[in-house]
Length: 300
Image (cartoon, one colour):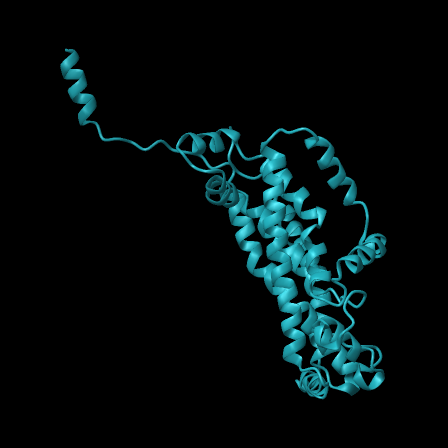
């Protein structure tokens, strides 16, 4: 009898269980209100960028119209062409200004990322005398703005002989407390058991850091790159660098921007050129940050 029942049960077709989808508590009117609100917030956030780009495409007569209009009636690229003509008349070429800015931004960001990540790994996963005290000093250092530390930084860099060199901007960027704080807080959520398992398998400290820790804290170091690039790309460096051939692109462009009414159109173009790189880096990095945050959560 038991065998017969088993045979009949085996012959019965499998019925997939019906899973009822959970309906949201919001009404249709609530959804419509939510979407309208999000569209409004998105427009408010995008409006400065839209207006800046539109202003850069306006001819000079439209820039002085009152009341001002958001979009250009007769868009033109003359402001950008005039900007590059003005830059070409300088005895320091545009490519030199661009190289200075790219070099400072790349080296400063790479060094900041490496040093902050290594320091954060030690603070987050190792116990040593003064561990908590050192991190408290880092936290307190975040309270001081760049305006407060400019004079001590200048005196120290002058003693080292780094004034009027690239290192006067790059070295202070290495020591920014924001990166160390961000990486340390994120690394604390990484399971210690994962690191211990790698060490049991024979992985060295450097291999653990490079192949296990860094891939799992990708959201933190991608965010760190965005902040660092924005800070260094927009750094005029006028306090530490005096030689014209070492000036940054932002400084040169802002000098043009302050040239008076005749350069209003070029000033609008300058604003677009200055902000385009940080915006592009953020746009291309944002999707990776969101994807990594959604897929790299680990728990003990």
